[in-house]
Amino acid sequence: MKKEDKSAIISQIAATLGKYPNFYLTDIATLNAAKTSSLRRECNKQDIKLVVVKNTLFEKALEQIEGDYSALKPALKGNTAVMFSNDANSPAKLIKTFAKGIDIPKLKAAYVQESFYVGSENLDLLVAIKSKNEVIADVIALLQSPAKNVIAALSSGGQTIHGVLKTLAER
Image (cartoon, rainbow, N blue to C red; front, side):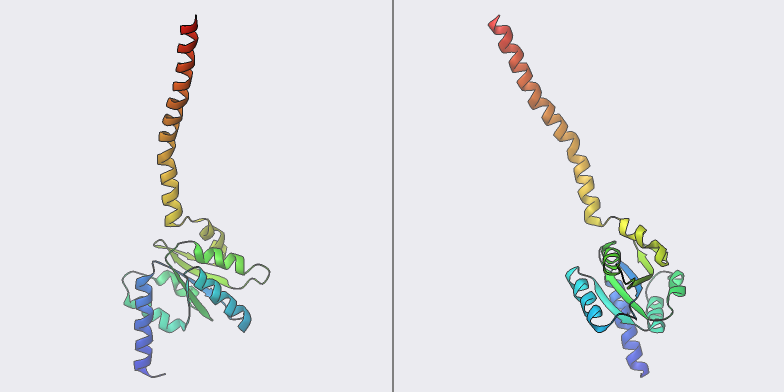
């Protein structure tokens, strides 16, 4: 591969890294063509970008962007596919459901919410991380809860007071 081609690929990977706040390094080397196509379709459905990269080119792309990504260096061995996502836990959920029974794709490492997770033992932890939309929904539910309680108390209290007043008026 020519040096110009390599630098173009490095620039493209660096641009993709800048677009997505989360990425997962996975190993999909032993998947056959049908399973790989199926994985790519699932990634597209869930708005996850799957890219197979050369480790050295990916390493050079990491050097071009801001921050220290040296924690990922041990995971950049063997075949590597990168899953880019805006959601923190979507790729982890996809890896977990897709790998049932065949244990592939394997999680090598992840950069999620400005933290590093190296090793496949972190997959369950990454699945449990709430996405931005899930956190917003939880906050809204918590904010609505006291207001709903007050409204319910006032409306039921109004019926109770009305009943008491009616009973007193009849006496």
